[in-house]
Image (tube, rainbow over all chains, first blue to last red; front, side):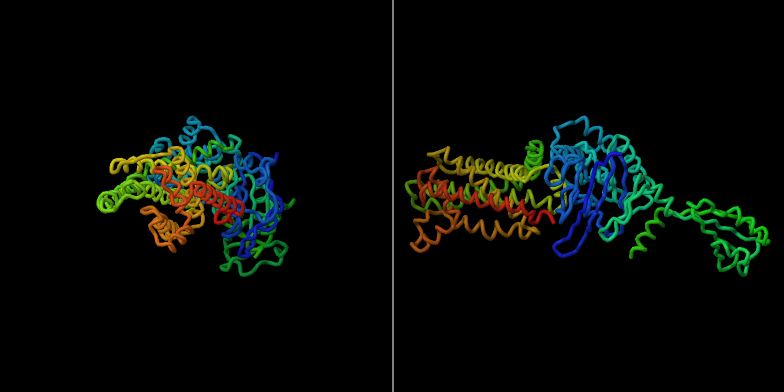
Length: 308
Length: 253
């Protein structure tokens, strides 16, 4: 797939000497949903702000569909829509007024039909004549998205799009993001909610202390870094593991009633059949069993923790 | 040129004027009318003519200029400061719009507003005192140059200010005193010789003098000097704005 955004050797050092980004290399593919994960202060917003032209880079280059963001800023910026983290709007402007303003600001001729479609898609059409100050938090969040979509961008940045949004609206947002992707828009989102990335993203990047420490397909990431565990509920408590089972990576719970077997999903032989056979041979009977799989959150936490 | 962006910002700023019509238009008209009543009718009737015109008529250009300067600064500074304050400046900075277009839109809107206000005040003045304009084209030129120059200064203040106090400080502590001392209510010929020399260091003297000349042919300094100084202030303001955008001063980090 063709890359629509290429970040090369990008660094940002603030006047205070704080190094927010260090030699970032990143390529975003056209039409994908890319989730950028990272703890607070990792550099997510700084990276987005540089790409969008809000913060000056200290070094490196960014190209949007082949256009350099500094030398050819007009072409680059007109392809980008940004939904910032903060709900920053002009409280006394109307919904229609603010989306019309955004479209004009990005150099597009008035197109009431497009704005109507965007507002309808975001369930804001019946509020078009309302002042922004009268909207609820969720409506304001959707309005920010409407403003970013008003000029028909090819890339949409969503910086923490569902922060402070209720569960129903979060799911609506996810649906909206998917439908946007279906229209060919490339989505780059930052989020604290790992389940959001797990739910939506095609690829995931992890940024930590100003460095990209990992970029991979979500499914591949979970396959490579994910762990599976088989948990057996024993009929009789065990005092200690028999020597015959020492070949397996088994953990016995403190009360002796539960055995946990951790295995690598990528191994050719994961050893469950042999384990169950050996348990039978040693006379250990179990009354129940289940498997667990590590979530993206577990993977993220272990990555960030390992790097500390 | 991103003409749609210039139009969008200009329309947005002009719409703000109509949303705040009490503050933007009615309030300055009322305060200027009070000046005419107090200085023109009440006190002015006891003051002899200045250069062959009644005192009430004499102060009209100065009062128009007073409003023009303060409103140009206020409109432009607030126009760019408010997005910084609310955070909506992100949209402007991320838009495919050049610095020239940003300045054109914000300063154009601020200057339009203050020129409209100046003309309204002029019309209001005509209700109180007999008025004549000897050189209408020069009057329009001075009005235009002054409105644009001080809107640029207001734009600079709006970018520099990091709080409402600073936003108000320059107009209140510098511009208003300079305007009052710049010959709004008197000709600098009326001052003692030493203060006449001091007054020549006040840039507003040149603006008011040139503007008053376009009305009655009366001036404290030559019209050519007034025009040169007005153009000089315009160039200085433009140079500062260009530097701000080149460095991203108080806009980008």
